[in-house]
Length: 60
Image 1: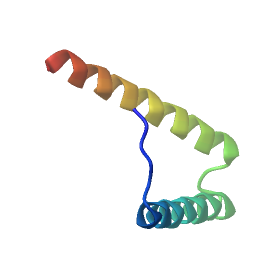
Image 2 (image 1 turned 120 degrees about the vertical axis):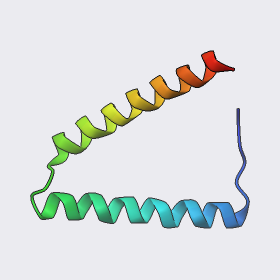
Image 3 (image 1 turned 135 degrees about the vertical axis):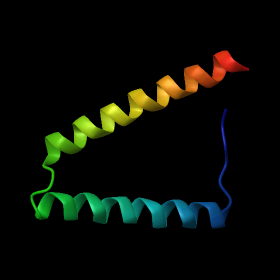
């Protein structure tokens, strides 16, 4: 499915993107997670999302 964002939607997307970027930089600068840790977590969350999506597909 393709979605086209309105100007307001693009503004919200940009705000959320900036927020994620600041959080990632903060996690790295404080030594909470390095780049590898962020990559690992991102991969894990994507796999969880796929799992949940598959579960929802099979329920309905």
